[in-house]
Length: 485
Ligand code: ADP
Ligand code: MG
Image 1 (cartoon, rainbow, N blue to C red):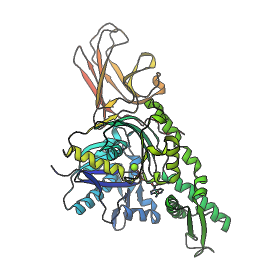
Image 2: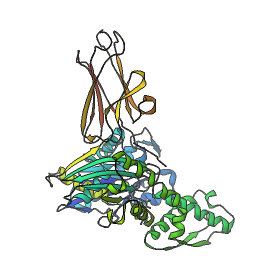
Image 3: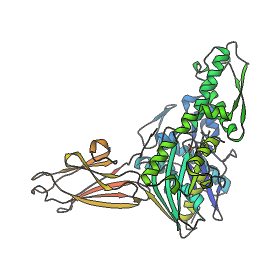
Image 4: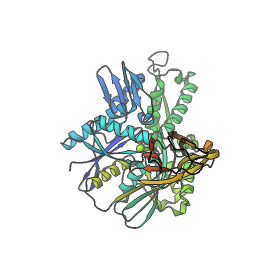
């Protein structure tokens, strides 16, 4: 069986890992980097990806695509240089680059991969991710959840049962997951998060602060010049990273972004302390608490019940984030030293690849569905078919009937949520089962089956048990709790 690599196709960075004698190893890209920016740029010299594309973002932002992951599974189209591209095509270009680089590094053609997605990704987003892989010439042998991959990366050698909380703060998203590990079984108990919170927000906040400083010094708001925005954000990101290791950062901002005015050639210099940076970004840090409390309450757990906390995502390198994790869960529970937080998901994906390739024998993976799923019944009442946090893969069915005499068809309205009233839950799709033979109200038996496969994809079918008539759809479960602030 050929090698199955693991790919963390991140919003900000893409990371590839492979298994070397059972241990995950990060594969460097052609530029020698362990992280490849998930950026694609259309230039005069053709399409470029990774760090080259990221450099292009400053010069030519209109023809540079970043954070394409946010568009996966949507009908969004990118119009560039006369071409029209789907999000999966753009993601496919990123995958092609990293898989190509990995092939060069390993000296063999890479044609199989495990790709990770956030636990809340719906069917369309998972399918789009798979398509992106196919466009890159890869067979996507499995799509797995990022927190599950992180747990795999850390949980391999563990014998005792552990309740683990995964905090994943990446460039643009924050995900909280609670998992149970033990006896070779990894179970996701609950997921929550904030899709609009990530390291970028820390950069943005600091960039705004720097702009204010420049304005004080020069009387000119640098943000009036659009080209200053990426420059200031890049400088802010650099200072943020410095402050993860050092207590002070010296910041040097070149002025005259357009090369004009009295300021060309002049610099604004500042010294920023970690304390000042933390004060400036305290409101962002606070937003980590809400989704964490939500996930705990969904899992029916208190912080004290958590045995270990895994910090995932580059932004968890910030000392304030670690400190908050320590305050919430206790110092001894945090494991963060063994694997780099921005590499742990790829490492876990490589382990899953090894499991699928038969390199390990006794590991099983179990995930859960994050929200209850069901259908609309009479009076706008939501009838649950699969409860929230049920292990997947799962298949559940219930028998329904007609509400009127001689009713010839029923509408199956598929919903996701926790509320009893249909109108308070999210609609995922609707389909009709017709040709029901005339019968008194309540007599026909319509069996509705909800099936979620190992990749988290949901299929709903309805069968008239008298005639055997069947209708089905594939629908898309949505994010559990997008933004709790
Ligand atoms: P994603 O999962 O979104 O692709 P990553 O896990 O690679 O992202 O995290 C990217 C984020 O981590 C960026 O906002 C980056 O600035 C931040 N980051 C990386 N290294 C550090 C560091 N040393 N200190 C603080 N933030 C960091
Ligand atoms: Mg990530």
